[in-house]
Every structure is written in structure tokens, then in C-alpha cells.
Image (cartoon, rainbow over all chains, first blue to last red):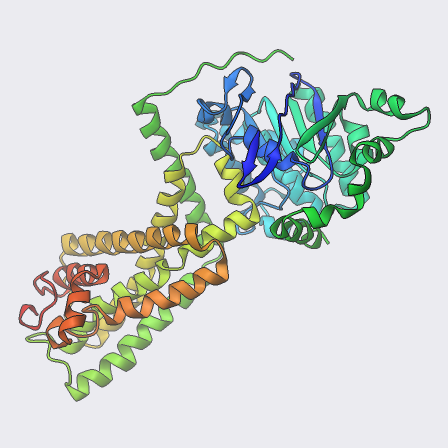
Length: 258
Length: 247
């Protein structure tokens, strides 16, 4: 459970994510997805209960948990005044990638994201899709066991979204890492996730593979129908539930991406 | 996928190593940012030069401020250096809020980086920014006839004092940023702080000529101590509390 004052953001969440799977956390805004992610990646304290990442208690071994995380926040969080290569090298240093391997690992991460050719350009000159891929390269450089993506394709055009999807699939196949992502795009969850969990008002509503959840609603049901079934009437009013800062952040990200 | 069980490693030595290494990594990024975009360094130099050229020369002419054996320009130069360090550093908190809003701070905080390393690196960058005006201000002062020491030990000492002073004000700004939370709010608080800190110090005039209540404030003003250190190291005035007799 996690509270902000009187508000219960996450309520009795009992969830297990299997190693190596792509796990989607879905739900309307204000459902508790971001709070869940922030507790998991050590940004918020564990107020009640236990959170373990690869067997490590997050509240006791936060620094050790962080060594195994890669994180891409919703905002476009690169240093525009650094080159693409410097942005990735920075995170290689923060994750203790050994000096003798560092240059090769940075190049590998940039190459995986198809950015090696523009690595020495200032990141401020990159397009929105390139910035997202640069963030993925930053998150990949330490070869994390768990990659956390918070709405990784918000504001991207269909081609850039497809490009990010391809990279996530590639990372799952090449490195076998566990990926936890939040998204509002049901087609994205359907396309990428082995398992999805739907949260609503801080509580877990349902967990399962996209196929099983669709079948549970009806023969021709889509994941969007599943979402509507569990989120109900709150689906259209999500921005009212979301904090002003969160809404502003989403819109700023979308605006920056053009 | 099988994931090896991670063995927690926690020791004092590891904690200190993390602090040192991460402060270095984050400081390097701050230097790289300055290298790619040094507009701020250039613009930050203009104001202190104007203070020395306009304010300094006019007040030298009218001989309104008693500075003992020192010329007023010699008295003022360390004060202006300290002032520029203050002005550069007091808004560092805005950068932290900017980094938070942009998601950069969040991303760094999810790495195995001690929070104190983030603060130390910002303080280091403020120190570098605080040093930048020296490159222009000292030659201008020499051209105006100010006798500044050429003793390398004193010069290095002054540089360290300037960096420490800038780092201190940067830390103060970051602490206030934690309370203010918003950039525009911190901008207002910063402006509210800079002028009282500057005018209630011995940067422009000796403490002796201040009204008694202001003398008390100047004695607890950290800028006064930075000015004293710089004055003692650069122009040979004893590093006391900045009284007329000490100059």
C-alpha cells in the first residue's frame, strides 16, 4: 500500500513479474501505475508490505537494486547540451561499466538503437524518435536485468513508435531482460507484452496474457474492450484524476516530440 | 531467463568510493555542458567588469569610502569577485528543479548514485562558473592599476576560496529549491536574497561605516568571510572581518 496524505495511490497490490517477460501495467491515469513503478525503482519508499526485485528487498538494498535497473521516464530526459555519445557514456559511468569496456559498450548501445552514425551530434539536434532511442541506449548501457519504461511512446508518430517497439522486442530477444512498461496504447500492450496487469483506483483488477484477457470478454474483444470493462466510466475522465504536473508533463513531452 | 541472485554489498569503503566516483562522473557532465554551451560563462563576466569599471572608478574619484592604505579599486576587486560567485551560485537550485521537471534528476536517482554526489557535482559546477569571471576581471583590475599578488600559492588559495564560496551558495540554493519546488518561486527568493547578502557584506565598503544593526548582520553574512579571504589572499589585506582599520 502507498499513500499520499489521505489519498491511497496503491492499495494492497500483490503482483509477481516473471524474469524475462515483457509486462505491461495498464490503467487510466490516477490508477496507481506510476506510483507502483516509483516504488519499484526506489524513487518512493515502501510504506507498507514488501517489494523485491530479483530477490532483493527494495527498502533495504536500494543501491544494489538500482545496479540492475534501466529506466526511461515519460519525459524526454536527455542532456541537450551533450552529444549522444556523451549522454550514454555518462550513464555508463553512473553504472560502473568498467573503463576498459566502456567505449565498446557505449558503441554497442548506440548501434542497437541505430544511433552510431549520429553519436557525435548534440542530442538537442535529434528528432523525437531519436531522443527516445537515445534514452533506451542510456538505459541499456549497463545491460540491466529489469528495464522500466514509463509510457515510452507517448507523443511519437506511428513510424517512431514502431521503431521503439522493434527495439524493445530486440532487447527482449537479445538480452532476455525483463521489461516493465506502462502505456495508454492498447495496441502497444497487445503487440509487446507477454502479460498485462490492469490497475484501477490503486487496485489490481486483472492480470493475464493479452490473449487470455481478450477471450475472457468475448470472441472478438480487443484489449481496449478489456480496458473499458475494468476501468468502466472513468475511462474518459482520466485527465481530471491526474495531477496538474503530470498532465503538463505529458503534454510537454508530446509537444517536444512535435 | 535466469537471473543470478544479487549479493548485497555494503561497506563504508564502498559508500565513499561511490560518492567520489559518482561526483566525478556528474562533475564531468557539468564541464561538458559548459564546454558545449559557454554563453553563460561569457555573459556572467560582463556585470562584474561593469561594477569595477563604472562603480569602482566613480567611487575612487569621489573618495567617499575610507579603505585605509588600499585604493578603493584594490578594495573593491575581491568584493566583486565574491559578488559574481554569489550571483552565479544562488540560482543553481533552478537547475535542479529544471532537471527534475525534465526527468533527468529522476533518471540519475534510479542509478546507484548517492544523492549527495548530485549536490556536490552541482556545487563543483557552480565553483567553476564562479571562477570564470576571474579570467577577465583580474586583467581588467591590473589595467586599472590594482596591485594583485603574483604569488602562485595565494592565487591558488584565492581560487579555492572562490570555489568553496560558490559551492556554499549553490548548496544553499539547492536546499531552498527543495522547499520552493518551482522555478519561478526560486527565482523570486534568489533575487530577494542576493541584494541583502551583497549590501550587508564588506564587498563594497568596510563594516565600520555601516549602522550598528547592519554591522551585526554583516558579521553573520557568509559573503563577508569570502570577501575577507579573497582580500587577504589577492591584495594583501589582513583577513579580518573587513573593518576599515584592517584594510
